[in-house]
Structures are given as C-alpha cells and as structure tokens.
Length: 117
Image (cartoon, rainbow, N blue to C red; front, side, top):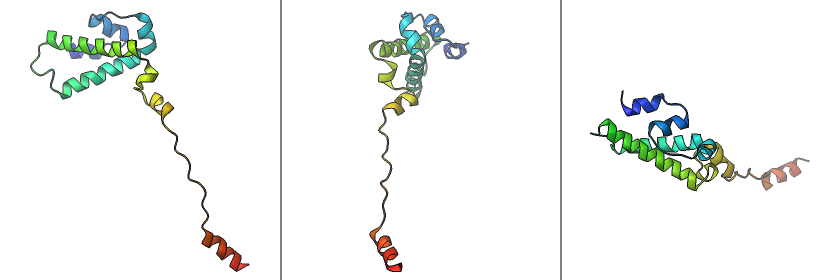
C-alpha cells in the first residue's frame, strides 16, 4: 500500500502526526486540527498539480508529505484558525455585508399620480 493510500485511511489529526513522525504540541492540534489537515491537503494538492510526486518512491513521497504537515502545523503555531480563514464560516465573518439598495421612487410616477387626482 502506498503512503498516500495509508494517509487516506487515517482519520484523527494525531494519527497523521504519528504516522509521518512529526512532533507536535497537543494544545495546538486540539485548537486547529481541522485547519492543519485542510492546509496540508492544500499543500498536497499543489504538489500533485506541480507533478512533485512524479517518479518518487514511497520514502520520498513520505518525506514530501511530512514536510507539508510540518509546514501546515507551523502555519497554526504562528497564527490562528481565525487569522488563516480556511473555512467559509471564517471568511464570511469578515466579509463586508452588501448594503441593501435604497428605495427609489421615480419623480415621474409621483407626478402622474398627482395628475390623476
């Protein structure tokens, strides 16, 4: 089974850290577990798009995955989930709310009403 297949079978954030042998602070992972894994997924997708895995053997792929997890983890050691805004709920929380259109009554429609009376 390839490293990528084994990663797909993992579910808990801690499992990823243990499998890839990446040291971590439990307090950071407890706060940002989903964010770390989502960021790692972004990094992995970018690597796949750039053909970074092409021609690599499993130990080398494991090293790339490990580096991505370390990088994702550091993103949240130095920042917070709210500051990174990976999920829609966080993006929407700071998005400017569109102003509703102001009511408009054409002067011509008022003049026509006045004529009819």
